[in-house]
Each structure stands twice: as structure tokens, then as C-alpha cells.
Length: 280
Image 1 (tube, one colour):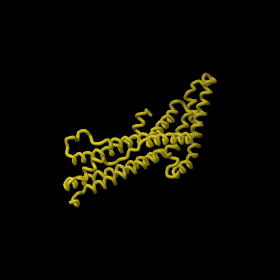
Image 2 (cartoon, one colour):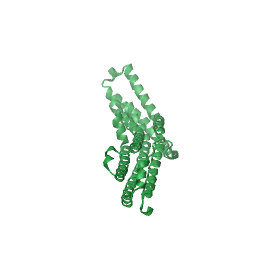
Image 3 (cartoon, helix red, strand yellow):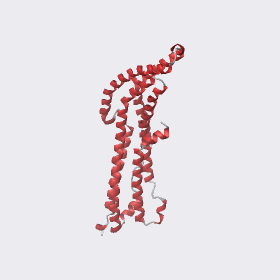
Image 4 (cartoon, one colour):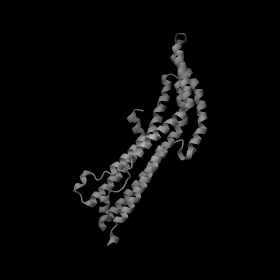
């Protein structure tokens, strides 16, 4: 009897969960392409813009302090060291430090836009969406009551996992925006260290590396999601050839869920991956 066949209900559940995942992926790509300047209608950035002048004022004051520290640490004998090229180098260093302190937000906006355009190119060339394969759908429709009951229970469990993974995906992207918004004002203080000697200026280098790793995190996230959907839609693994059709479908759903969980793990570690791959 059709009443005892649960195949249609299983497919409806799978289509609903896959639709949820596809919507989350679309939202993630939209967020990754978006600059923090426009995030949430620009409200959070407006707060940062209001705070930024305070950090610029502090950074401008610190430039002079770090310049004096660098001058004192490099000048053992003032009369011997006061050559024209030494004075010119110090003045250039002081000027660059002050310029970076005053214009660090402008530089960051340009980086945000460039990375967002790169993510847009990646997502624009990817039309792959998560969906159940046609042959697996036919197998599910034709399942008997016993097999379909087992399949329904397993599908419900896997659906819960996929939904949790979808929320983790959004959480990770929102957390990236929060990190970016927090570190933007700190740039004025970090770049003020450029006025000092090489040891003091290492702070500016460290800050720049961290900033780039957080920004480029979006590219790694986009690549991970694109590869995830491509792996899922590539079909059954080769070792399922000796199993019954309904068992192959179980393996297919388990592999699908495992790949989604793997993708979320890669997305969460995107910053570390970008940092190690690029040496920043």
C-alpha cells in the first residue's frame, strides 16, 4: 500500500534540507562579497567611523614617541650619525608612519572592495547547487516500508546535522565581520610604530599580516563551499558497487552529510589556512 511507502516523505524532507543549505550558501556568498562598510546597512561601520578619529589622534601622538625611541636606539653617537642620508631616512619613515595612521581606513576599504570582487568572480562562475541525484531519488521512491522507515530515521538525523552546519556557516561569516570591524580602528595605533626602529615597526608588520589573513579568509571560505557542492554532486563513491541499492543510498546520504560537516570545518579554519598558505 502507498500508505506504507515513505519515499515521497523522505524526498520532501531532503529537498527541504537541501533548499535550506542552498539558501545558506547563497546568503554566505552575498555576505562574503559585501564590504564591512555596507554590512547591515552600514550601521556597524558608522559606529567604527565615529570611533576612528580617537584612534587616529592617539596614533598620531604615538608616531612622535616611537620616532624618538627609534632615533635614540639607533644613534649611539649623535655627531657621527647625523649624516644627511640618516636624517632623510628618519624623515621618510616619520612621514610614512603619519600617512598610514591617517589613511589606514582608506587603504582597508580598497582591500575590502578588491577581495569582495574576487569572491564575486568565484561565486559567479559556480552554479553548482546541492541536490539529490535523480537515480538516488528513484531508489528512495521505490523503497519498501522497512527500508523506508530506516531511511526516514537516518534522513531525519542527517537533516538535523545539515541544519546545524548551516547555522555554523552563517555564524562563522558573521564572526569574520566582527573581527574586521574590531581591528580596523587598531590600525592607527599599529601603524604608528612605523615611526620607530625596525624592532618597534614589527608591530605594524604583524598587524598587516593578521588583517590580510582575516580579509582573505573570505576567499578560502568561498573555495571550500564551491568544492563541497562539487564533491557532493559528483555521485557515489566507487566502493559502493557491491551493496544493495538502498544501502548505496544510505552511504550517499552519509557521505553528503560528512562532506557538508567537512566544509563547515574548513570554513571555520579558513583564516589559519589562508595565513599558512600565504605565509602571512
